Structure formats: C-alpha cells, structure tokens
Image (cartoon, rainbow, N blue to C red; front, side, top):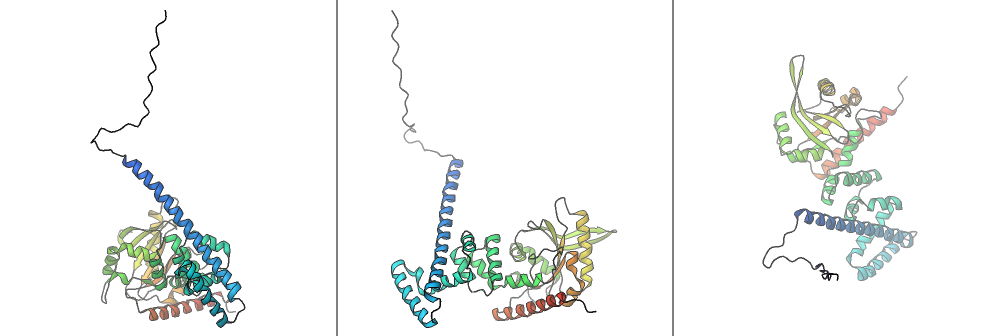
Length: 357
C-alpha cells in the first residue's frame, strides 16, 4: 500500500511586510536612477512644448503677415492686427496681445525658412528668440543664436552679451585674420571688456594679472567658451635665462595652448618678437600629441592697429586686442565700437585691392 503523498504547500506570494515599527529603507542608487528618469522626462516634455510653441508663433506670424499685412496699407493693417489681437487675447490670454503678435510677424520675416526655424526651436526658447529680434543683421542673429547653444546662455546672459556688443567685438578681432591663418576665425574678441575686475587708474601689469586670477571664471567667460586655465607666470628657460609668460590657457574646441601676454599702454612692435619666442618654446616643449600649434593673444590698453596690420602677425598665430577696464555708457560704447569696426572694414577693403604697379 503506497504512502499518502503529503499535500503540496502553496508558496506565499503576498508582499513581505516589515515588522511593525521598523523603518523602510530605499537604496540611494535606486532613488537617484528613478529621479534621473523623471528629470529627463520632464526636460523632454518641456523641450517639446517649447519647440511646438515656437513653431506655432512662427506660423501665426507668417499667416498674419501674408493674409493681413501683405499688400495692405500700414494704417489699415494695424487696425486689423489690433482687432485680431483683442479677439485672440479674449480666447487664449495675454500671450496673443498686439505686441506679441507684432513680435511673431517680425520673427516670421527675419527667419523666413521653416526648416531653419524648426531647428532653432529645438535649441532656443521663445524668450531667447524675442531677445534676438531687435538685432539689425542676419549675421548678428546667427552669431548670438550659436552662442546660446554653444555656451548654454540664459536669456539674461544673452541680453548681457548683446549689450556688451559681443558680435561687433568678434568681428573686429576677425579683421586681423586672413583665410588660411594659423588663428581660426571667431577665436578672439577686440576689445575685451574687463570692467568686472574693478581696476582703477594707476594699476600695474601684476595688478591686472592678479585681478584676472581672482575673477578667473568671469575672465574665461569673456575670453570664450571651452578655455581652461593652465598656468600663471609660466617659466621658460632659454639659453640659461628665465622668461615668464603672463597667462597660459588651453582651448578644448581648438585643441591647442593659448598664450596671453598683458601689456600696460600701447602695442609695441617689440611685443611681437617676445610672443613669437614664447610660442616657439611652447610648441617644442609643451605641445602634446594630437594638439595643434599654440597661438598667442597680446592684450594692450591701445592696439596700434596700423602696426598690427603691417606686421601680419596672424601668419605666426598671434592676435593683438585691446582691453578696457571701464565700461563706457551704452551710447559711447556703441559709438566707439562702430568707429573701430568701420576702420577694420576699411583695412580689409584695402587689403583686397590689387597691388599698385
């Protein structure tokens, strides 16, 4: 007679409960991973919403421009726009008031290509785009849009860059550089605005250097994106003599060392020979595999622009720029930069003329 098989014991699948009164702990790693997923999802939703909103504003502006303002007398078109804004505001809120509708129309006119707008909408918020609308040229708008993406500028930082004429100062620096130069275009600015250092009249080169190092983060933002500090008073021994380079940086985008010399007063042609020597030494002893040849920036309180043009230092990887330790009033800043820019464009035009026979 066979033995009775014992009844199979059912597996308990109810959740395990902690004893009453004991704390429930969660892995920190699990919390971080879940939080990361939530943050990524929220960012994706916000990015999609911003892109959709921006494209909608562009489409609204295009429609108004073609259907309402196109071919209409200015006064008549303005009346229709005001009426349309009143009705849309009643339906959708203040985002569609008359000033905003005017911005949408301006947006559609300044950026007529739908594909470019679609790409822009993925990278810039509507408030960034609104800050670009008052700019006078397509080149300036493209420059600042690239700056927002490359440097992840907030709207406040973008407005600051526009107020400090970053585009014009970059264009002035580029006027020294010819195609095929060792110095890539869009690397430097001229002048550099160092008002944040808080220097007053009578400072020495050592004071300027010390102030830069005290506020290195702000200086690096002024110099450009991707720069990192390497050394101060970089020592070089040549023929038994000591030489010291004021500041040495490394540019990740350019994959090269950038030597910076600080000068009080006007640029002197003798500064060129000093920088050439430093760059040759850096190229021989500090350049590593995979890096490009070092380049140099000579910062002076006055650039002596005709000397700079005649010396053609860009061929040796050297650029000269002014630095201003006090920021002039807005109108004066614009006037001074426009005068420098006008002079730079005239020099470029002369450079392109055929040589006299």
